[in-house]
Picture 1 (spheres, rainbow, N blue to C red):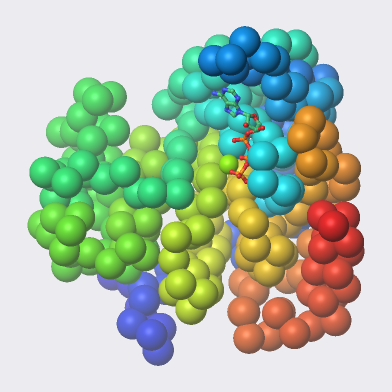
Picture 2: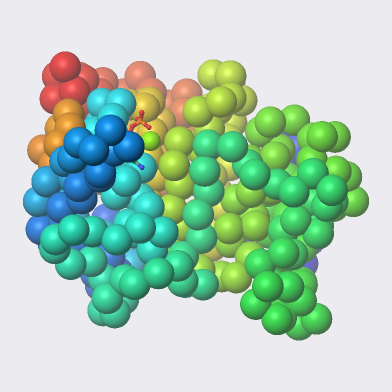
Length: 277
Ligand SMILES: Nc1ncnc2c1ncn2[C@@H]1O[C@H](COP(=O)(O)OP(=O)(O)OP(=O)(O)O)[C@@H](O)[C@H]1O
Ligand SMILES: [Mg+2]
């Protein structure tokens, strides 16, 4: 499949999902009454999450914002099955979460690409681990994702030969490699400069619209949350609780130059800022 490119040279996938409606799907993640308590080395207890309820529907893009240390990463790790809660329940597609699942892809702040592997080898890794690295259909899908992510032509480069933004795009492709239902992202663009970040937001929106995934993304950027999210979920300072769940009612695909200055964006940004202060 050959894709058109936009003025910036990025691949433009057919945006079949542009008609997505907020909250149109069935609940995919259901978190109820989740509590997480850490025990520190010094022997203290830290209440990180206190009675968190969150529902994310199939196909939704939910952004999670909150003060530093409020428990965002803790919640994401629970959703990724990398940690367990001390109370409450969490399920994915109706099944209790108990450990990492091929249905969940995770992207962290650092791309964590393996330096001794090329881009293609890195993004193929989940298929190798899953025993499907010789599946011609899956390999074709990976190449399509690389093209959508603007990495065509860089398949045989090593991570050190890529920019930070390109490495993060490769990490997103790797997370999508096994066609997960759910993509979890923890400040994936936090280390990038403002302009690259804005471009990455547009890229991610495009990948999301083409891939029809459910996404939960943590960010410290209110603008990023409003630009990307169908909903922006605001957490309190530790112990983390959900204090507001706001719907972003802006049609897609969103264009930064148009939406950032719009009255709805400004009003929502002000509301989120007041909640965080
Ligand atoms: N392994 C751990 N052991 C003890 N305490 C922890 C551990 N991991 C996190 N914490 C504590 O739990 C709280 C929540 O941490 P978490 O990393 O989830 O916050 P966060 O919202 O992701 O913060 P940031 O925005 O700075 O990334 C913090 O007070 C932190 O010190
Ligand atoms: Mg964090």
